[in-house]
Image (tube, rainbow, N blue to C red):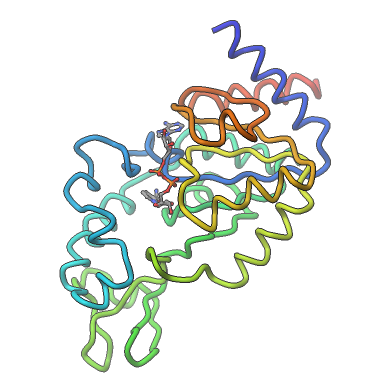
Length: 250
Ligand code: NAD
């Protein structure tokens, strides 16, 4: 434990000195809110293989089948609440220690945890689109309808990025701009294998940012470009980091 405390203190020094800090978050930050990541045993993804259910080809071929997974995901996400990691990051933003969060998640928990500057790199599920006629709906209009259908009779798709789909262009450009000017980047709960989100740490590092990684396990970044690796649960590490930051201003 002694070693982790020293590492948290070193990470706090970096963030305290940095004039522009951003974060990249992934499914791991929401595991403690009850939303499984791709690795959680016995979770959603052990029954719905992402390569079979989360690709755009799968949706085009059999949208009813994909909606079986989306319905369960909707139910899990709608019952989830932000955990201490989301809340600590929201407070870091309020205190001026964190300027933007780029999240790969579609669960809205950063916003519910108090963060305002959130870039949803993989979109969000508050709107639905028809891939066939282009019509768009607010999800609330179709609440409880499974699968939700368009005026034209086809099944609607939530505006989240499926594997094989492009990143929303505004999110892509903004993230690139932020990664290019960040002095520090926190990488939280992501295996950093999904492209192109995994280019964000590389761009930040090339432009001189310090990389602080928070994860339960080593990733391919840990022994390559990460500067400080804080091994543990995001829900414990982030509040501890916030406490260290607060101690520097009192
Ligand atoms: P991933 O499942 O590939 O990796 C999750 C990472 O989080 C792993 O490295 C794991 O060790 C780590 N982790 C798990 N629990 C943790 C905890 N309590 N504290 C710290 N780290 C923890 O997820 P990914 O890299 O985000 O890529 C999967 C893709 O699927 C992304 O686009 C992701 O957003 C999406 N997805 C989103 C949700 C969501 O919105 N909550 C859930 C599942 C998948």
